[in-house]
Image (cartoon, rainbow, N blue to C red; front, side, top):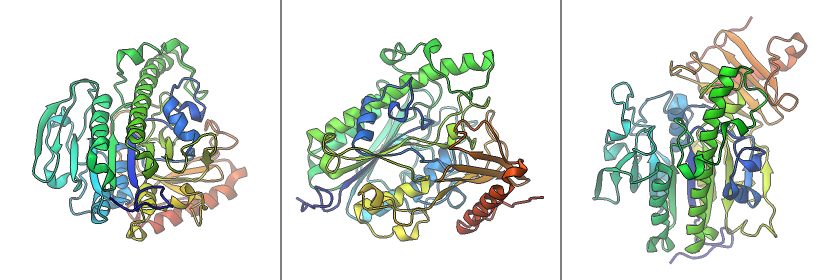
Length: 455
């Protein structure tokens, strides 16, 4: 049995658990003010944890985000676009935790093997070789799937046992959570710290939820965001989609509750840091746009809550914190390593927010986060050219294409991004400051495949 630690309340090194959804906007939790959402378990985590309401997906697209998440590298250095394969030789989160003596496990959507949807419409039926599973000790998942009731997984349970393609017996989120809950309840969890990941496809389209959840949401009762395009055709689609999305999110929330219950039943909640986030958001008709890749808040801002049962167990004695730090995708791995006390994170470009989570201060946390669209997908409902930009802690957003300025918003005064100031001479000075800040990020990250051209 490992020795106990005053710092973590448990193991000398605490467990780290990532739970993340796909295509979930940051606003879509009731603790973040959404009138349509029912998320009691995530609300409770927020109420006794830390809610980073300014967290962003610096590249609002599945594959690049996931590549950055697992490697701690910016997309241009790992997975630049949709259906690009994660380089097998690149160190992943599992490598860091394996080397530190952790048990590592991954359950769910991977989307990092470069499977081409046009060649393989059912990407979950394409088996990923073990050497391309990020070197997790246990890996049960699939590359991609958009059929929540017809999902196949494969993988390995340990060093020698392969799991063949197996159809999940029910709704994807429920079944994948079953794997994680069983993992948490294994007796050896008390003897060795773990790093585990649960990655689910919902609330990504198609917006299909179990009927007991879907029946709770009437499209006509959904309260739309003020910046949804004022068009009957757009509104009809948005209402229908959102009713499904909120039902899917309530189901995710239920499963988060199952995970927390499993941690509490086993006494591991005091030893575990739980991260809840999404890979990016979804426009859902805001500004007349749909899906992702866009630099507007609906696609860029993501839910991001971190909770630790030991430090934040009693809501009566420890009130939850809301942080305005601009957490970006490259920050998640170094922060997790920081909480675990694992060396090596100094070689990663992201910031370690473990000091914020331990409530000892933000240190020299960056005042902005870098936004990128490195390799456009060229899908419908996507941005078809590269862009770069920044979002700042004091509420400014700037975005440019290689042709010059594109967007400039004061998010504190204009949270719905309805007033683009990019070409307003009154804001020329601020535009110049944010141009220079973007250039600094461009140079700091070695993002040399993008060129600026201004008048």
